[in-house]
Image (cartoon, rainbow, N blue to C red; front, side, top):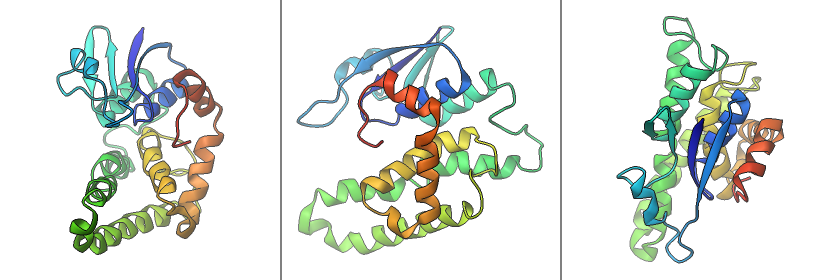
Length: 207
């Protein structure tokens, strides 16, 4: 059985959701953030040297990085439901969204998080950060116009990864300007598998 090393209020919640969508049995090892630093506990380094979550263990294989985990699960357990085959006409678009989620989309959010801690010293960087946030969120919003999911009418592994982008945008109070992205987040949260993952994983402030 798959074991998920799950950190509260983290991107590992997506892994629980995907496993629920797949109908794949899994166990959870829970970790709690340090209440003062908000960092993961050192115990996670016993599972993977980076000491971060998510990490899964499946058939003795330790797999880290959200994108790698989601792609692995889609290929091994998805039975073709959550990813187009390489060579399919829409595969390049799917691949783009898979990498965009943890690449371009998350970078300005992370910059905003760390730069905001600098106070006035970080103020000169904020216009550029806000511009990039608007650039990326507008792009996602445009891609979702007239479509339930990033690849059309069918949920894919790319949506699993992109869910956190929509959630973190909501935390920053940015979704009012992006109605298609806001509706996308609502569709995600309305899925029974998503609700089941919250029940298994525990409180999740981004929901």
